[in-house]
Length: 204
Image (cartoon, rainbow, N blue to C red):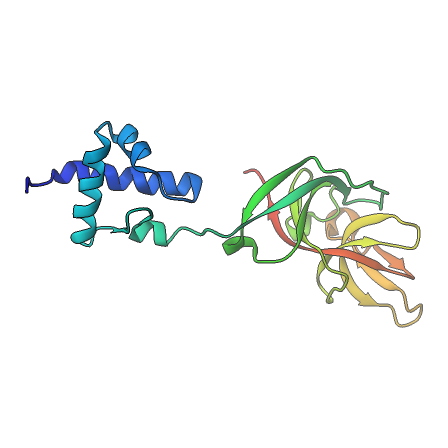
Protein backbone atom coordinates (compact mmCIF):
# COMPACT_ATOMS: atom_id res chain seq x y z
CA UNK A 1 0.00 0.00 0.00
CA UNK A 2 1.28 3.43 -0.96
CA UNK A 3 2.29 5.52 2.07
CA UNK A 4 -0.01 8.36 2.98
CA UNK A 5 1.02 12.00 2.86
CA UNK A 6 1.10 13.30 6.46
CA UNK A 7 0.39 16.86 5.27
CA UNK A 8 -2.80 15.72 3.53
CA UNK A 9 -3.81 13.89 6.71
CA UNK A 10 -3.45 17.17 8.60
CA UNK A 11 -5.50 19.00 5.96
CA UNK A 12 -8.29 16.42 6.12
CA UNK A 13 -8.29 16.44 9.92
CA UNK A 14 -8.36 20.25 10.05
CA UNK A 15 -11.19 20.41 7.50
CA UNK A 16 -13.27 17.82 9.38
CA UNK A 17 -12.82 19.67 12.70
CA UNK A 18 -13.69 23.07 11.21
CA UNK A 19 -16.73 21.64 9.40
CA UNK A 20 -18.02 20.03 12.58
CA UNK A 21 -17.64 23.23 14.62
CA UNK A 22 -19.63 25.14 12.01
CA UNK A 23 -22.35 22.55 11.33
CA UNK A 24 -22.37 20.18 14.35
CA UNK A 25 -22.21 17.06 12.17
CA UNK A 26 -19.54 15.24 10.14
CA UNK A 27 -18.85 16.23 6.53
CA UNK A 28 -19.50 13.78 3.71
CA UNK A 29 -16.70 12.31 1.59
CA UNK A 30 -17.66 14.68 -1.23
CA UNK A 31 -17.52 17.71 1.05
CA UNK A 32 -14.07 16.73 2.33
CA UNK A 33 -12.87 16.05 -1.22
CA UNK A 34 -14.00 19.49 -2.36
CA UNK A 35 -12.58 21.08 0.78
CA UNK A 36 -9.04 19.71 0.39
CA UNK A 37 -9.15 19.41 -3.43
CA UNK A 38 -8.57 15.68 -3.84
CA UNK A 39 -10.60 12.77 -5.21
CA UNK A 40 -13.41 11.27 -3.16
CA UNK A 41 -11.77 7.82 -3.25
CA UNK A 42 -8.56 9.35 -1.93
CA UNK A 43 -10.44 10.87 1.00
CA UNK A 44 -11.95 7.47 1.85
CA UNK A 45 -8.56 5.70 1.79
CA UNK A 46 -7.05 8.40 4.00
CA UNK A 47 -9.91 8.25 6.51
CA UNK A 48 -9.52 4.48 6.77
CA UNK A 49 -5.76 4.81 7.27
CA UNK A 50 -6.19 7.60 9.84
CA UNK A 51 -8.71 5.45 11.70
CA UNK A 52 -6.26 2.52 11.77
CA UNK A 53 -3.54 4.80 13.16
CA UNK A 54 -5.86 6.07 15.88
CA UNK A 55 -5.75 9.65 14.58
CA UNK A 56 -9.54 9.74 14.18
CA UNK A 57 -12.51 7.43 14.63
CA UNK A 58 -14.24 6.59 11.35
CA UNK A 59 -17.01 4.00 10.97
CA UNK A 60 -17.78 4.62 7.30
CA UNK A 61 -20.20 7.45 8.08
CA UNK A 62 -19.32 9.42 11.20
CA UNK A 63 -15.93 10.97 11.85
CA UNK A 64 -14.79 11.76 15.38
CA UNK A 65 -11.61 13.30 16.75
CA UNK A 66 -10.32 14.63 20.06
CA UNK A 67 -11.24 18.18 19.01
CA UNK A 68 -14.73 17.14 17.95
CA UNK A 69 -15.25 15.37 21.27
CA UNK A 70 -14.71 18.71 23.02
CA UNK A 71 -17.40 20.45 20.97
CA UNK A 72 -20.67 21.01 22.77
CA UNK A 73 -23.60 19.75 20.71
CA UNK A 74 -26.38 20.90 23.02
CA UNK A 75 -28.04 24.08 21.77
CA UNK A 76 -31.44 25.66 22.28
CA UNK A 77 -33.30 28.52 20.64
CA UNK A 78 -34.27 31.53 22.74
CA UNK A 79 -36.46 34.35 21.41
CA UNK A 80 -35.46 37.99 21.76
CA UNK A 81 -38.75 39.50 22.89
CA UNK A 82 -37.95 43.21 22.81
CA UNK A 83 -36.94 45.61 25.53
CA UNK A 84 -37.69 45.99 29.20
CA UNK A 85 -37.13 49.22 31.07
CA UNK A 86 -34.63 49.16 33.90
CA UNK A 87 -35.86 52.52 35.19
CA UNK A 88 -39.54 52.92 35.97
CA UNK A 89 -41.86 49.95 35.33
CA UNK A 90 -43.33 49.94 31.86
CA UNK A 91 -45.98 47.79 30.23
CA UNK A 92 -44.46 45.69 27.44
CA UNK A 93 -46.23 43.58 24.86
CA UNK A 94 -44.22 40.47 24.10
CA UNK A 95 -42.92 40.63 20.55
CA UNK A 96 -40.37 38.21 19.16
CA UNK A 97 -37.64 40.02 17.22
CA UNK A 98 -35.72 36.87 16.34
CA UNK A 99 -34.56 33.50 17.68
CA UNK A 100 -30.93 32.90 18.60
CA UNK A 101 -29.09 29.66 19.39
CA UNK A 102 -27.39 29.41 22.77
CA UNK A 103 -25.16 26.55 24.03
CA UNK A 104 -26.40 24.55 27.00
CA UNK A 105 -22.82 24.21 28.24
CA UNK A 106 -22.80 27.94 29.05
CA UNK A 107 -26.43 28.85 29.73
CA UNK A 108 -27.73 25.58 31.18
CA UNK A 109 -30.95 23.76 30.46
CA UNK A 110 -34.44 25.17 30.74
CA UNK A 111 -36.84 27.47 28.95
CA UNK A 112 -35.31 30.87 28.24
CA UNK A 113 -36.09 34.14 26.55
CA UNK A 114 -33.99 37.25 25.98
CA UNK A 115 -34.84 40.86 26.81
CA UNK A 116 -33.05 43.99 25.69
CA UNK A 117 -32.43 46.25 28.70
CA UNK A 118 -33.17 49.97 28.57
CA UNK A 119 -32.42 52.47 31.32
CA UNK A 120 -29.71 52.70 33.95
CA UNK A 121 -31.20 51.46 37.21
CA UNK A 122 -29.35 48.11 37.16
CA UNK A 123 -25.83 49.21 36.24
CA UNK A 124 -24.42 48.20 39.64
CA UNK A 125 -25.53 44.65 38.80
CA UNK A 126 -23.59 44.79 35.52
CA UNK A 127 -26.67 45.47 33.36
CA UNK A 128 -26.36 48.49 31.08
CA UNK A 129 -28.63 50.08 28.52
CA UNK A 130 -28.77 47.90 25.39
CA UNK A 131 -27.53 44.70 27.05
CA UNK A 132 -29.27 41.43 26.23
CA UNK A 133 -30.52 39.68 29.37
CA UNK A 134 -31.01 35.90 29.24
CA UNK A 135 -34.06 35.09 31.37
CA UNK A 136 -35.00 31.63 32.64
CA UNK A 137 -38.78 31.26 32.67
CA UNK A 138 -39.94 30.53 36.22
CA UNK A 139 -42.58 31.76 38.62
CA UNK A 140 -40.51 31.73 41.80
CA UNK A 141 -37.45 33.67 42.93
CA UNK A 142 -35.04 33.81 45.85
CA UNK A 143 -33.96 36.93 47.68
CA UNK A 144 -31.16 38.52 45.68
CA UNK A 145 -32.37 37.23 42.30
CA UNK A 146 -32.74 39.72 39.46
CA UNK A 147 -36.29 39.17 38.29
CA UNK A 148 -38.65 40.14 35.53
CA UNK A 149 -41.60 41.14 37.68
CA UNK A 150 -45.22 41.70 36.72
CA UNK A 151 -47.38 43.45 39.31
CA UNK A 152 -51.17 43.77 39.75
CA UNK A 153 -51.22 46.60 37.17
CA UNK A 154 -49.67 44.35 34.52
CA UNK A 155 -46.52 46.46 34.47
CA UNK A 156 -43.18 44.70 34.20
CA UNK A 157 -39.68 45.68 35.17
CA UNK A 158 -36.25 44.20 35.76
CA UNK A 159 -35.20 44.61 39.40
CA UNK A 160 -33.58 42.75 42.29
CA UNK A 161 -36.01 40.87 44.52
CA UNK A 162 -35.08 41.97 48.06
CA UNK A 163 -37.65 40.03 50.08
CA UNK A 164 -40.93 40.92 51.79
CA UNK A 165 -41.52 44.13 53.77
CA UNK A 166 -42.55 43.19 57.34
CA UNK A 167 -44.98 46.07 57.80
CA UNK A 168 -46.81 46.15 54.48
CA UNK A 169 -46.19 42.50 53.51
CA UNK A 170 -45.33 43.76 50.03
CA UNK A 171 -42.58 42.36 47.84
CA UNK A 172 -39.56 44.65 47.62
CA UNK A 173 -37.95 45.31 44.23
CA UNK A 174 -34.71 47.26 44.45
CA UNK A 175 -32.85 49.43 41.99
CA UNK A 176 -29.13 48.73 41.49
CA UNK A 177 -27.70 52.19 40.87
CA UNK A 178 -26.54 53.74 44.15
CA UNK A 179 -25.18 56.88 42.52
CA UNK A 180 -28.47 57.88 40.87
CA UNK A 181 -31.23 56.06 42.75
CA UNK A 182 -29.58 55.46 46.14
CA UNK A 183 -31.97 53.24 48.13
CA UNK A 184 -34.94 53.54 45.78
CA UNK A 185 -37.25 50.53 45.75
CA UNK A 186 -40.68 49.43 44.56
CA UNK A 187 -43.22 47.80 46.86
CA UNK A 188 -45.56 45.37 45.13
CA UNK A 189 -48.62 43.87 46.82
CA UNK A 190 -49.13 41.02 44.39
CA UNK A 191 -45.84 40.25 42.71
CA UNK A 192 -45.86 37.93 39.71
CA UNK A 193 -42.43 36.64 38.65
CA UNK A 194 -42.08 36.04 34.92
CA UNK A 195 -38.49 34.88 35.04
CA UNK A 196 -35.07 35.22 36.64
CA UNK A 197 -32.08 36.81 34.90
CA UNK A 198 -29.24 34.32 34.49
CA UNK A 199 -26.79 35.86 32.02
CA UNK A 200 -25.94 39.17 30.39
CA UNK A 201 -24.78 39.38 26.77
CA UNK A 202 -23.08 42.67 25.99
CA UNK A 203 -20.72 44.35 23.57
CA UNK A 204 -17.30 45.44 24.79
